Amino acid sequence: MNGPHDLGGQHGMGPVAPEPNEPYFHAEWERQALGVTISCGAFGAWTLDESRHARENIPPATYLAASYYEIWIRALEVLLQRHGFVSAAELAEGRMLEKGAAPKRVLKADMVAAVLAKGGPCDRPLDTAPRFAAGERVRTRNFNPTTHTRLPRYARDKVGVVETVQGSFVFPDDNAHGRGENPQWVYTVVFDGGEIWGEGAAPGLTVSIDAWESYLEPV
Amino acid sequence: MSHDHDDHHHQDNHFSPMEARVRALETILTQKGLIDPQAIDAIVETYETKIGPRNGARVVAKAWAEPDFADWLRRDATEAIASLSYTGRQGEHMRAVFNDAQTHNLVVCTLCSCYPWSVLGLPPVWYKAPAYRSRAVIDPRGVLEEFGVTLSPDKKIRVWDSTAELRYLVIPERPAGTEGLDQAALADLVTRDAMIGTGLALAPEARP
Image (cartoon, rainbow over all chains, first blue to last red; front, side, top):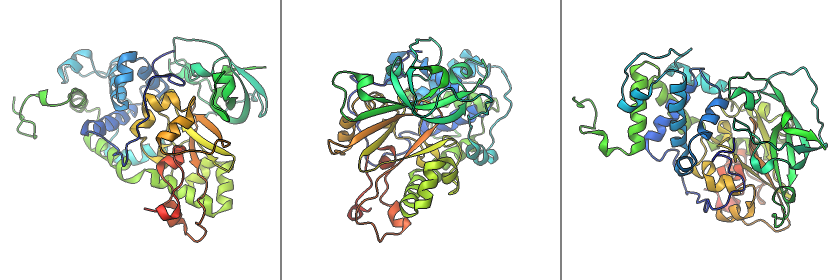
């Protein structure tokens, strides 16, 4: 979707403002936001792709004004309601009113080290050969789905070169919507700055994206 | 209703809106048995004390000191990094990209906040914020200036937008005058920003 998250190339967002000796957390609630988000992810009720899409669906004015932990929490509330774990009335009241759905697993303290160490690998074997090879010129597709995609707007309908065939991975555009993992080959595709930004592009700039095969067409 | 059990004796109105919001969510989930407060503490402790940019600095120092390890990183960064026991969440599929005399690498996630947690820990606020995510791909030199980094005009810049599940670690150029340093001393020169590409490795005289 062409949501507020798709920020590459936008103007007016101000200076970057790095903070010297930045703490990991700027408030106690951010600690809890991290822990609650990871704990609820461990239910196994939704995928990382679905959670990304929930974040993208936060209204633009809210999204752009929010810290990233706030974005996480707002999206988590949506996911918990969508999957029946928490109701809107409970969120409004701040307490349990009904039992709700039961998750496949609840993350306990003694499971944390193993769960974090395992992570969530997204590579999947694929029987078919990659359609494109390193060195090949490709054009990214031009599309504007209202659903989840990982092809940024700035990199649509652009000609680049496949640098690396990176392996086969879960396809987020399907997986975010419960349509299955449907793995595809993923390629690192490199674009000249001028191809993307046209006149006035920064000299000596190249930009790469990691693109699923269906984002690409032969040139 | 009594609140004698904690420090907050009054209504929630002295909390910030987000603090109140997260507390409410935590309360509901705890009442339902869906979260374990001790698990949350363990997650936070992991990222406050165990997994952070010192991990990545050791990877870089080893790559500088051992050409075979650098080759391994180029071929299979996930396995090479796993040999140092840095694995797991948001480091499942690692790629190492090497700065050299011709090219400076810069990593961003324009679409969200993808970041190599296993080697760099939790991302800083600016990495996840709109200014960096919007400008890194179109004005990387301007962004670098804000970090106090001025590259020579003839240096090429390669920006890696982490749009899939690959996570990128920049291997900065080894500073001059570091020939006599062991890997622990070399690692002290490797800042978090140098491994994102928004900084350079420190000169030995700037060693903290």
